[in-house]
Length: 131
Image (cartoon, rainbow, N blue to C red; front, side, top):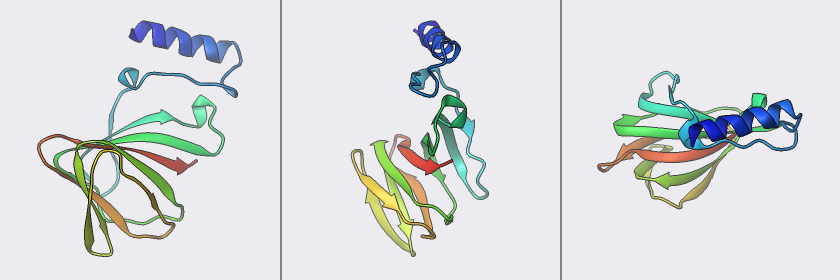
C-alpha cells in the first residue's frame, strides 16, 4: 500500500498537478517530535504543507501520548482543531474543557491555550494553521 501511495505522489508531482491536487495517506507519513518549548510526549505529522502545493494553510496531525501536554501558548493567528481520537483537555485562561472525538473548535488569534492528554489512549487531533 505504501509503495502505491508514494508512486501516486510522485506521479502527481511529475505531472505538474501539485498545484491542483495532492494525495497521500496518513500511514505513509513520518511523525516528528513536536518542537514547541514545554511540550512533552507530543508527536506531529505534517499532512499538507507548502511543498505539497498548499498556498495559504497547512494541515497537521498532533498526537499527544499518555501523560503528554503542550505548553500554554498563543500565536498571532487562529487555527481550527478537529479531534479524531482519544480524550484531552483544552486549557484556556486557566479553565479546562474536556475534548472528545468529533469535537471541532477555533482557537482565536492571541488566545492562550494548551492541550493535555487524558485516559488510556493518545489524544489525537487535526489542526489547520496558516503557512
